[in-house]
Amino acid sequence: MIEGKNVYDQLFKAIDFNKTVRNVALKSAEKAFWIWNVKKNTANKPKEIQKMKFYMGTSILYSLVRNYDREYISKDVLTRIYKTLYQGAFFSSGQKAKDDFNKKYDFYPPNFITLSPSKACNLHCKGCYASSTKLDAEKLPYKVSKRILQETHDNWGNRFVVISGGEPFMYKDDNKTILDLASEFKDSYFLIYTNGSLIDKKTANRIAELGNITTAISVEGYEQETDDRRGTNTYARILQSMDNLKSAGVPFGLSITATKNNAEILTDWEFYDYYFQKIGVSYMWIFQYMPIGRGFNIDLMPTPKQRFKMFKMWEKCIREKHYFVADFWNSGIVSDGCIAYGREGGYIYIDWNGNIMPCVFVPYHKDNIFDIYRNGGTVTDALFSDFFINGRKWQKRYGFGNDKEKPQNWLMPCSIRDNYKAFRNDIITDNIIPEDKMAEKAMNDTDYYNKMIDYDDIYREITEEYWQKRFIGKRNQGRI
Image (tube, rainbow, N blue to C red):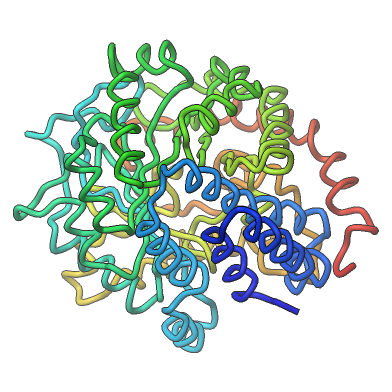
């Protein structure tokens, strides 16, 4: 029986066969993946959770096949994806480092890091915290950015890096750019979140040459929604950048902020068919609006009813059409809940000031990388702040990493977004530092506190019985 890494090998290698032979190989490998992931269920998770992981895992493969057949992804780039993303990040060539870390600290390290090396951005989107000019924007020195990635590469075995911003393609220090940083780590795969306005043909070709980068381009919906928030003609520039990437053979995806104003668009098949079939995206990240940053507005979040409707749509995308869509936080099922606080398989976030946060949506920190380096430490030291430790303890109580207990409601996985009372009572510490004035205001705003908890209570009422019956029922527990 094909298991573990061999399943992924079979699934991925089948892409490059002729269509007839490939389809037979795909179905055979897919069946083996089902047996390994769902029927054997070595993770010992409820059956319905493992099914969702299966649909999610196979949908990325089908998305790549779809665009490879249309020649939107070149064979050279596909080969690099196989070596860096599948063999490197998914089945890490850094496993020895992970095992050594576990022996030393009694838990496995995070799987990746999100780094925002610069706050600079060429757009001024409504409600964004990062609208600075390139002249005054904070940024990390290139040597510090490289040192952070070198430490997580060598000491954590990481082979996957997320770059955010600001606008990453504006980053420049010591005459080095974000593409230079990716070239330093050829065995790692980089996911870069970008507004998409700066990817000209030269940049797209350079990304193709490197072969270890994919870009998630931000839109708000269609042209009208995108230009309304991001500026006139932004959408046209985005479409041109997408054409440049397709011509160069580089896969790309979308990054979408879901609000109550565009939630209905995100529950319509037309939206997904347009981007996956007509435009040629390979994946889609949906980030439900989190009331943090400048001008936060709790009332802008998708309503609880809209959110549950989005959950249903997400499942249809990965199950019925093999569209690789991840909805934060509706997809918490496939990540075993919250992935913040540097947990096993999770991540941490470092911003342009060097502040080390548990998540891009948790704007509070205890440590700063510059202080750690001045004291002779490494980025690993940040994992052991009381703030991060409290977060990981909460995650375990909530069901991650504890096979003896049934997971709590992973339809509400986020510590700060879905469990705000627990975040305030059990996770934050007296010594945490707000990322900015708005984060400080949110912490001290009674109305904010009450509205966040009210939202959580309403959504729990909508989802709890569904979660218990579908995912935690006796028939779905453990092995099958």
